[in-house]
Image 1 (cartoon, rainbow, N blue to C red):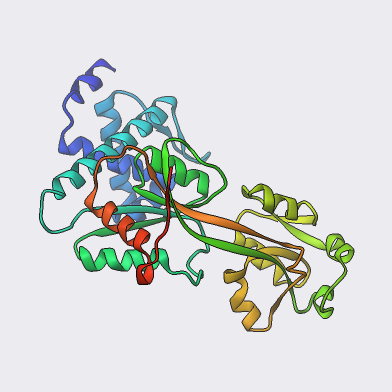
Image 2 (cartoon, rainbow, N blue to C red):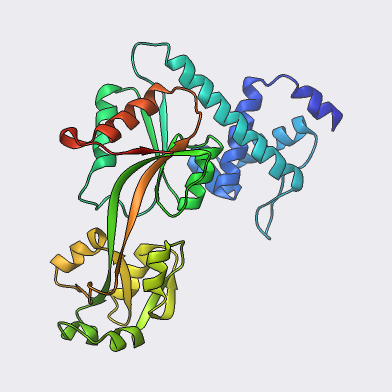
Amino acid sequence: MKRGVERLGQISDIDLRLLRVFRAVVDAAGFTPAAAILGISRSAVSIHMGELETRLGFTLCQRGRSGFVLTAEGEAVDQAARRLIAHLQSFRNEVNALHHELRGELNIGITDNLVTLPEMRITDALAALKDRGPAVHTNIHMMPPGHIETAVLDGRLHVGVTPALSRLAALDYIALYTEQTLLYAAVSHPLASTEAPAVAAIEAADAVLPAYPLSDEAQAVVDRLNHTATASEREGIAFLVLTGRYIGLLPEHYAQRWVDAGRLVALRPDIFSYAIDYHTITRSGRRPNRVLDTFLDRLVSGPMGTHASRQK
């Protein structure tokens, strides 16, 4: 143990390379999927992991037929490696800021199914960033809202786009847009044959429960439905609703493609609907980052001079 600590007293390029391989293995939950992501052979991944364990002086993970599991030491190294890599990226961005040309990375986390929103604020801001800094490397991560908040706080993400369900003092917020959600049924569903089906009939029909955090307003609507199925993402709700056997709540912009194709209809939007506000989040008190600031400035200015609001 002592020998391993002494060897990592000064971090070398080899140590960083091995730690990046280790992080890939953890994220992929195994050697084989990590090898595909890294573009190397599985045996090479195994060699790198063995070398890292030798340098550290302890076992990082258990692997075999029972699956891939981190040891207690492996979990601690994983957290330390995350912080180290985030700090290295911060250093790289700060050095890049010394150059006149805009360069570096933008790591952004976004929740699912926002690309169909008619307000293209994120798309427009990304386009403006690419025009301003052709050398900027953009990394988009599709993640649940809670994971995005954690990743922004620990520095793995520069910025996130999440629903406004709660506010953390350690984050800054920029309001983006409001998403309207309606209750839908497939045209083959019995409720779709009536222009204004009875509320009691809607509440008695088989419905899909969204298995993700909701606002109080949204939860009040969801609680009125008869849940006989669940879905962890909105796409899962769409799969079940399109069977014609269930009804479910979907964002209006997301469902519009099937409405236009004559496959879905909204059920009593005057009663079964709710709105959710979306915003971007960044870490409070963060250091200046030209890449991130350029992206945020474009978000704030918006199309044709409109302005989003910055909030704490």
